Length: 292
Image (cartoon, rainbow, N blue to C red):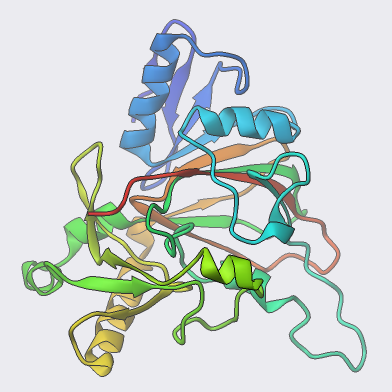
């Protein structure tokens, strides 16, 4: 695929099923109208954008996030930076095993990131964009994988599309389907994050394109059908979306800032680096619309 160029930037599609690299841009300085429009169109077309560059502090990450919407702080207070609650520091360095310790040597709430998920689906207006910025990356492993759920929907059989039409699902902070339990919430945080209901197939509010709306850490069940049937459908979809033709694997470089559209993607992390090989990121998430 060929690059798209404006007077200031280049949008370079990567040699992957989707995603693009944005070159020639200052990630934190004000953007002129042409630059902002070029990035917006690239975001809608490619779903995952890579902005390479030097390490940014939390202020820089927040400034970049604001280019993609209104930043939202995480429900868990302990994940918020003290002075910038919309920014989270994520240390997913794998810990060395300790003799006599549980053989699962990384906390379960971090291991949840190994499952395919989309951010903040357990709130009424879940995430639009996520910005993840690499401060430290392991020498090998630790990639982030992205799934194009719009392309996956398009590839479904017509019979499956009919089966999914109109189905709604319960998303919760915790669910029986999740392999690992999430971070513990305070009562205040529990009150702020009741279960919500979203369509199983959502329509992108800007492009109009349909996409599967899945999150295997938060999606508990499909409404109005027996639980066993719900489990069977979700298991079938989980296997279907994991095909290579829908997947982009991002190998991190220090300074990378990757921005993705949670309305038509899922993502997961590979916990396959060596114990002690550091992986530290800053993250910000912007609030989206209520799925329909």
